[in-house]
Length: 420
Image 1: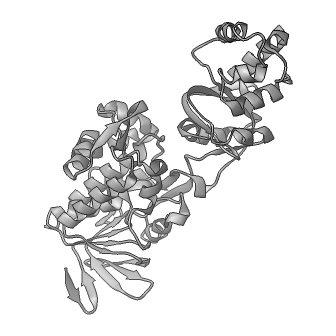
Image 2: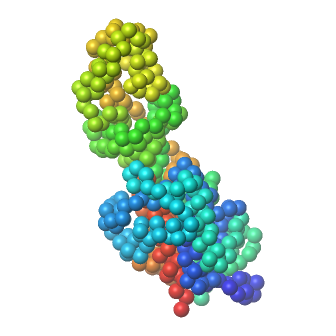
Image 3: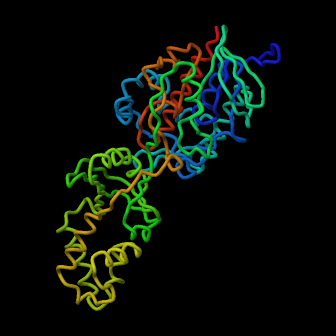
């Protein structure tokens, strides 16, 4: 770091103190570069702290890189080089070497053993401390100005910094309350970098049915959801869903939300939820009959609570016009089979996708064809690197978004530190 005509110069300047920015800054610093990290919020990692419901699903424990990259869809072909430099194995080694114990849960989702995203943040802060990274928070960047020997960054308070290497880690536009407002896209466009339109990608779905709010907070694992367009099933997924006061959320719904949004532009869309995908309707009916025969003189609604969550019992009876106060022995066969059929195909009607404020990540961003993916450097603007959620890479929930941050940030930090 040196000061020239009131402008402070660093080898590397990282804009954005999210996951990708922090690991990039730490990596460049530990390789010997002088590094400045600028963050517009009062503290670092604001979005990281709310990720995974505050637990931070920091990666997915899929150690076969080819299998892992399939989760990134058509962008997988761009990712072989960065993931060969820093993949899932290296991510586990990194966090464990910085004092964070880890654990693996269903669907290979990896979490800190503490169940707190603050453990992830603490590891990154230690890493940056090891690299002597200078951190300036509450610093809002106004613009990036290209010059003969690099770039000058001006802040809204008038401060200026200079560097030959800039790492842009400003995220997409999801959760704007955390500071992700798309500023980086504006700066990069002015530098001539192409931006693909940014939209909310992994978002909850609002549904029309008014009874849905009665199930708010109810979660189901291993259910099947079918996306139906004009009466035809176009997509099916199995996973975890969550009923909310406005509709549906949970990993399965988030991962299906882009398809739902596209389908809503094409025709009449419904979501059919099968709560018991491992049983056909006959098997489910047989199992229910066993329970009912054991409780013939009890109230139906009380017996069904041994079979289903209480709030779902109320809704199921209401939707199928079955009186819950009758004794089990008074239940008609037609009503019983209709109830089983409903549980195998609970139908909800999407009305809209929730906005960016509810999005886990955004789609769109920097066109990968504009980057040298071996280094994360812009082909048009030498010395400018782009990482994390600013990249145009769709990915499902399950740790894949944060893994992209670690991979792209590490690679960018490594090559930006090559100050030769």
